[in-house]
Length: 341
Image (cartoon, rainbow, N blue to C red):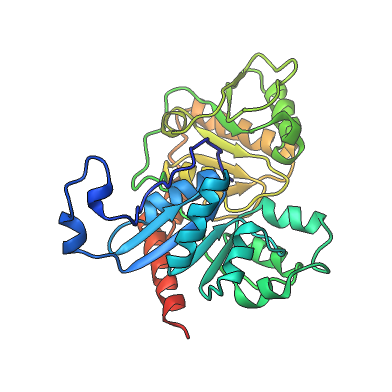
């Protein structure tokens, strides 16, 4: 679900120091006018944690993200963990790592763990729940981004509340379909090709040589002998341009959370093929399913009969997946947690 990027060991947003100590900021103007009400320390997945803190910060909330990098950074995390109102970890587990162990030792009572996809798969492969830490099951508020992850986490002994994780890149309005038909796919590493459906991508691209395919996100490995109609790109931090020039977005994964790429594509009005049943998407469980659906959409496009995916646009807005909608829901739920005794 998540596009990885590198950041340094400094916090992303929501600096809790006095404003006078920050570069390019006038002393104490905003802080004295609007003191922080709630402090949330975010930890876990680098990319998701970074953009989540940026989206959630403001309006009386101070969200600060720290990656797990270096002794100095860990000491900073410990200080901020002691001061925060909520400790929030993106990425689930049923044993205590350094962050949760520190929270436990500090007797933090307001802790949220957000399960996002591959974390559930990883814990299942480890053979849990037999080795699950009872403290994590009983004292941490568990959220999961999709209905199927709620069910999968239950096999680990974890009871999750359904809370989608917002992508700040979901647009408020769709973009027009491009004049040239093409298919957009994603895969981060050849070694994870089976999980992301690389075999399916290559099979369908070869069977539809007249349709351009663009693959984004490749950070590790090389695709051997790719078909001529498959163009491969590395990490793309902002996919807006790629969504605007794609007609179809296909996610042939064998396991997933709530894919940000899917949400963003639906918001743009693109025709989305996904392994999972989801509003506004066409469910495709195999390469043959995807090939037939892509060919059908291409035929309509050639006849100038293919419209925007208005059902997908409606699914985002009416389902509450716009960033501002999810930000409000998450803040409301955090308020409930903070109000609980």
